[in-house]
Length: 587
Image 1 (cartoon, rainbow, N blue to C red):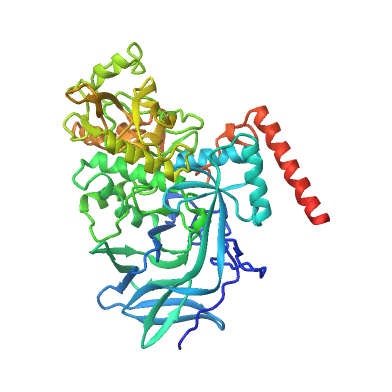
Image 2 (image 1 turned 90 degrees about the vertical axis):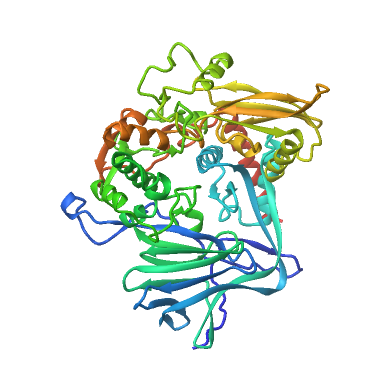
């Protein structure tokens, strides 16, 4: 049966028509976010003997259709067929096939449409975005976290759903000194429509469920001239997202998901104990972070932005053994899942949470010198001291990571490259000093007791710019961690030509070092001992109904994250907005 494109009834975007006709077009389905994140088979017990697997929703292809030639080939495994389930005006329909090619075509709109959203802040990481969102909420502004290309905090579209409310919000924020928020505006003249062709008919649908009898589905994608192939367990769903494109979501059991994560995060050749530690952390991480993509109606992505997940095309006996040995085990602190953070290499010392992100400290994420010996006395030789830090970075031996490529590094970058990269960063953030032409100097102005750079300053021809914490790796190309110092580089005539970044580690450096866990596993440490080393005070538990997956930190509840002055200013702002709205309706 040939299916025609049909009108959607609800929206995750609000639009204003540019013509004189008052008209709102709704592109994508409104997302109803529930705090009951976990879908499980019907069973009243979480006991070990009857424990059920948890179904996850992983966005394996994000923003599909954002490029004109995007396509996905979805196949059943040999001897199987796919069941394609979709909605029609008469209810649900199912067709069967061995394979389909999913494509997206752009359809013209009858009238141009203006899409608007208020972006309150932009961030490198979800952790920073979430803390910012909590502080905005503490000031009385409802928010949602989005990821169009990097993490952003938006004024909640269902609350600020009219042009008047959005403009009043921005005006009030500017009046109270905010210079980070802005209106993101785009004129739409066409909209994307996903489709596939089967038996000579073209099916246009905004949502499609794909199921296979053996719960194995092959997906191929052409990307930048290369064919990328994956084999996924579970089922797939193509659905709209909040950015005017689609997401291919893999609905997959937790323990199956780990088979596609662990070998690609730590390496299948890692020692048994390190594999087990990684499995426990990966399981803990996904369950604690199920809220990340609530705006798009799935839970986690498949990239390093979350955890690398490549499906089941490459599986390994040693990895499967480690996952089975730790089945259902998670890492907890005070009966709550920990922030199960890990990185490739710490550079010889792990970082507390607040070295990278704002928000309350996690007591179990403390500074740990990544060594089994007494290579550095942190209590008496703080790395906040520049001289101490340089001495620490010059140490090459005695650390668990000492034989790894990213343990110590040096990168040189020219002023012209720094100007180009920093301007790109500033433009993305709508910074008022974007477009500067010269850098006069760069310096580290604040360093944490663990050596991480907390704040840098750049003097440009348009003024001084401050860059903090994890944003530093967005603003400068050279550092691959925030554990570094800088040295000016001069030409023969003693004029500045650039800077050398000298440091250690790869990644944020918080929590477990994957390189360090390799060494500890080779030394005969158990997975429990490895996790206790990197996460002091934590406990390994079986998942059960009393464990808290995640909750807002206590200090950010209600208005606790804002000062009294912020609260009073915000309440004044809200009262002013209400009066303007009331007066507008009265007239």
